[in-house]
Amino acid sequence: MSSLLIKNALAVVTVDDDDRIVENGNILIKDGVIDYIGTEECSAQQVIDASGCFVYPGLVNTHNHLYQTFTRNLPQVQKMELFPWLVTLYEIWRGLDEDSIFLSSLTGLGELLRYGCTTAADHHYVFPQSGSEFFIDRQFEAADLLGIRFHATRGSMSLGKKDGGLPPDDLVQDVDTILKDSQRLVEKYHDPKPFAMHQVALAPCSPFSVSEDLMRETAVLARSLGVRMHTHLCETKDEENFTLEKCGLRPLAYMEKCGWTGPDVWYAHGIHFNDDELLLLADTGTGVAHCPVSNMKLSSGVCRIPDILRLGVKVGLAVDGAASNDCQNLMAEIRSAYLLHRLIYGAQAPTGYELLKMATRGSASLLGRDDIGQLAPGKAGDLFLIDVSGLEAVGARLDPGCFLGTVGFSKPAKSVVVAGKEVVRDGVLLGINESETAVLAEQAHRKLL
Image 1 (cartoon, rainbow, N blue to C red):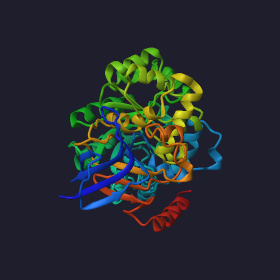
Image 2: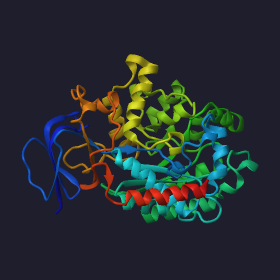
Image 3: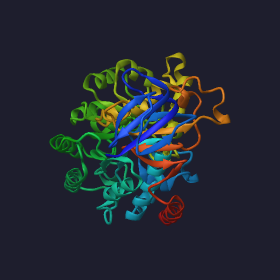
Image 4: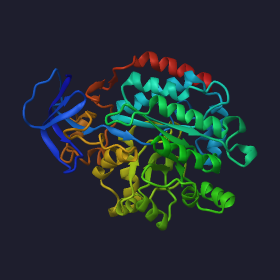
């Protein structure tokens, strides 16, 4: 039996059912699962001294596009909104190959991990017509090297320009190819058991890049295989106008027609839902991944988070694609969300702690998991430590639960633990050589451009 003790934490923010914060706390993890949280002394094979640190449950990212790591901070697209932004970047993304997928995944997942994210969901939907057969396999390879829990969503585009869609025709696939590979990936990688390191969901890209047939058939396949469903929805007014013109329906009504509501479905963004649509989401258990920084950068709008929380709609937090953020730091996303909603909603805005809860338990619920997202006996040994003993935290330690929202923390975590194994120490990834990876990744980035 392996065991790890986190000892002498200034505060353990559990995000458990009782919202406990344990001062001077210890956490004992055995075989990857939390065995004890409290102030009693324990012994273990490995000990991490958390003196001067706040300890949090591992953050859970619910929507990303790791391949976009190699198209960050491009001056040509900085003033664009979603549709022209996509049309411009498709011209670069058609050059993706296995090396760029593997190295962008290492880079993006590594950045997430260093800033406290222990479970990441990625939405990969760009498959050039040759050489893209094993893109998702390379993502799992990268995740395993780093030691992060990984939810791959097999994305897809089937509606090219000639059929009235947005993407180029050479970046779309036929329905049979998409469904066949979706089933292959589920059968090869999806682990439905508690504490799984690998899971798979099916994720046609969006109403403006996917045919109605693919939406319908994906829902049937996903439910026959027992996996979840994910797509972009209600991100922009352009998307709303597209579905009204092409289908005669608002985006959510169109998705409902295709069988895409229910507790096994979560949407990215969800900015432009009206009151009745929010009630439908709540009634059906359909979830939303909130991507505040991406929504601000692309001028898409502000998700109605206070209303979503009041109605009990399932909601998690996400960084979205690296090219629309342009970083992959879920700790920073918590503070951005806090400030955005304070600006828009004032006293109705969620607190820093509510946003931490969104990034942990809320995000876990979108992925259909109750084994992650909190620190409690019987839950996964996924957590991170931040050192608050320095000048930047003086006077700010009174409320550890709200700290990441109200104060923020700009440095990598002191330690990150996944399944009871330390994967980041003193802000450095232990699974890979960061310097060597950065050189290789930069070369691949330049080659792609």
